[in-house]
Image (cartoon, rainbow, N blue to C red; front, side, top):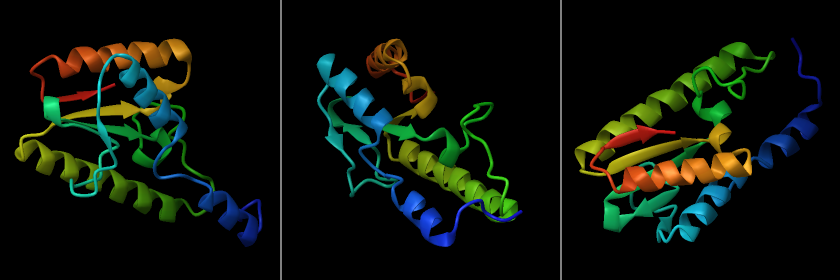
Amino acid sequence: MADIVDRQTRSRIMSAIRAKDTGPELALRKALHARGFRYRIHAKHILGRPDLVLPKHGALIFVHGCFWHRHDGCRLASTPATRQDYWQAKFEANVKRDRTVRKALLLQGWRILVVWECSLKQPQQIAATADAARDWLHSESQFLEL
């Protein structure tokens, strides 16, 4: 199946996709800051460039887009109808890289929280997710997905 837009339009659309400072990420940062948490963002020296680093808690937070990181069972994790082989390979590589990074960081002693984009859509969801993140930060748990 051919793409429904021309190459130039597709290129413009794809170039507008942000890797950092996304809407879900900004919403979580604002909610955590309001709860008294202070953090560093996009730490280049840490494998996987986590979205938030909370050194005081030994914790890293990744805000994953459901589409790009393949959130299981999520309606946002659809697969494009065109070039399905290309997309399948890309998605599998993303998931494999996420798994490898997570294992390496856990071995380094970091605690990891993965927050999915779909849990940050509505104001009440943002608050609930931030509260769950706060509770996790005060726990001993090494890994959590929200």
